[in-house]
Image 1: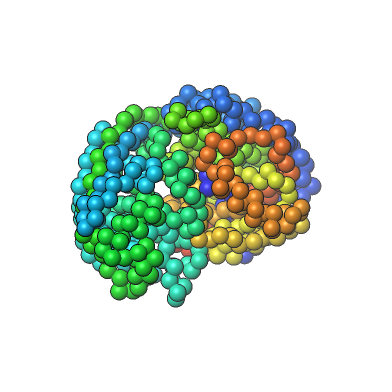
Image 2 (image 1 turned 135 degrees about the vertical axis):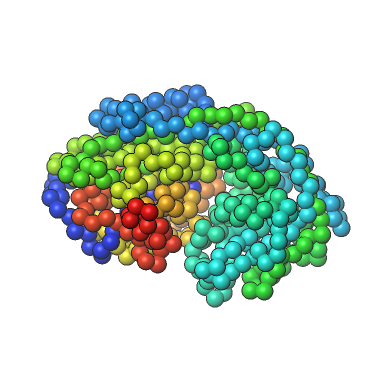
Length: 544
């Protein structure tokens, strides 16, 4: 999860969606009343209980959590979506890395300490990997021909590249200005380094553009990590270094961190040989795991072979026995409450009369916290055809602080159609849309809907608002900052009896209503022509 958020995805061809035999607003309102705070709270409490052991993939906590969700789907009358089973196996490799110190031999010798100065891991599915390779500073580590940008002006084969987080914040507004593109994500930088034949990639952490502190980097990357089985990486080392470590490294060639950032923004920037070699050994304990997605379907009517997909991740970080005191990452907000919201939405769809024309899928994914693994597996091995899946609605977190006057939309510029649709449903609640208040954080690329977007299924998400009925935007900003600093990816993310569920109910009603609109829509969703996913969807709908 990437903060406390509610996520929604949907796109439509025309500015106004035409529908037929859609239920009356009275009928939808009646279905909304089937949702209740009591089971929402009860299920959130259960999924985030210590007995779930932090819901790590491949753990006893996974077995308990996935069985719990499957039972709830069955109780609601959802049919198993996978040939009579609620489960879809997701083969993974679990990796517990234990790196040595990272030593840098250059003009000045530098020794970086694990967790204090760097984190690193290897995904070659080997128990021990050693690397000793020259270091090169590669700016932002981006090759983006559509933006006339290429940091890979020189061969980086068998080198370790050191890169900055986020997109280049160019003064001419290239890329998407302040809004992060996928090129700004650390995952892209690792992928591109591998494509270029590099030996490794180290991302310099900086709190503001990363949108989280070094403590989150450590907690997210030093326990058992997972990757999809059968596709080992060729990159020997993936990792992060602190901004201080990056500055020390760059000073080896007479540059400060800030000076290097300025150079990286120049069109004629070329990779900078850091005149140093980095060496590290990574011992990795491996185990093969059949983790699970959980999927149920509510069959539709006249268009039952077409689908609207709701999804959310059930997994979190498990336990960390090295911590003093509390060692369980309960993940109450991230994402026990999101899964509980999906269960309530399924309850509302079950109560809706008339039944939806299209079938509605409810998918609980594994491995989101490990890099969107469960959703990636589903995108590559869909249980139901993606070219007949209209859109995704993904819930990752919730607003437990009260009602808001607004709804924050990520990917605000992806489609005027989705804005019109969301505005229509938000207006019924007396709310308004707000663009992403921190687009540089790249939140669009940080949750499961993105895996489906990459294969063409229309995906945009909406986060809970920041303009609270009590306290306004000032309170909203303070709550967001407190969440990121204290709770996000920490053992402090626990269920609280003090939560206010009015905002949760407000948001799940909104995304339920949008799903109803989609389930009766006459036309298939499409991306706007300006979207990076438009061509992929067009090919998918043609069966290519």
